[in-house]
Image 1 (cartoon, rainbow, N blue to C red):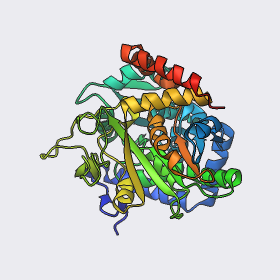
Image 2 (image 1 turned 90 degrees about the vertical axis):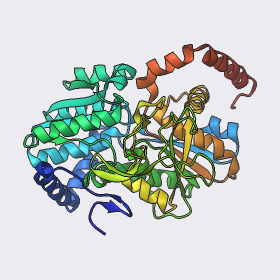
Image 3 (image 1 turned 30 degrees about the horizontal axis):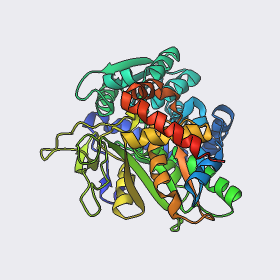
Length: 418
């Protein structure tokens, strides 16, 4: 199989002007992979700068509430900058040093990748520009504030749907114009080769830690591992720790938005009903081949999710391959279900997942009771919810949400977790 392909998906469809830049990037990445001292340098950096390893927390109250399997939460929210994104950007920062470049650019949706990239740039003394859809700038003001204070230039993108896909397009345009001095810090396991492989390599630290931790805490492997899926970097990160363990089911959870039958969602691989075809179709865009939400002419559709980091039109070619081969099962969670799972997790455990991460909680809560008490499941909490404060507050101000909160508050009071 050609390098950069995962089954039917992947590749590097890039303009000729970028061929030399990609050749250099491939060479530096291959050199780093072959150098054991590089990986150790990366692990040491993440330990001293980014609080790794992050904990694996037994959610005792949620476990009692749902019955069935013991629920463990991998706490990527406690990683530096509040999400799994730091794993990738710090690794790419070390590669930038090897290449001798002086500037980095990035795209961001939820803002966590932007904050992480700005943090890395500050630490390594690099100039930094972040492209962010105008709609996401409005939704994620706290992260925009921190990016700017960290020294990055944040560029709101006003074209298209003004979300993540448009920010990626603008970042590529910048890279073409400034490739000699600039490295594009791709935030997820998408885009042209070697980005999927590179981002997955750095994110595998999540899965390696989780495997050791669950064996130490539970004495056996988990029955299932859940992760939200936008582009797919946190999912690929944790899934890699269990890929060879066929008894461990890997479950990715996409953004169901307002419902899979409404057209207002970002579920590329999840079928509307059992046996139905998924909404995504094969296509080539933004430098690679995968399943995209597109019309019959190949034009990308608008997407929707309450979580800014999940409304991307495509999905990792790695995950498309794992889904096609049956190794990863895909599901979707609606905005309403996500808000309910968020409220329940906060009230039961004192933990505030990011809206993206809460999608994984939804599916885990649906299924925990199906398993015996001696089993365990792991939810990858890819980020923390303080970045979502305005989105959550806006949702909870709605009269329907206020009624929901009152009802749930009464329910929680009647059925204490302890």
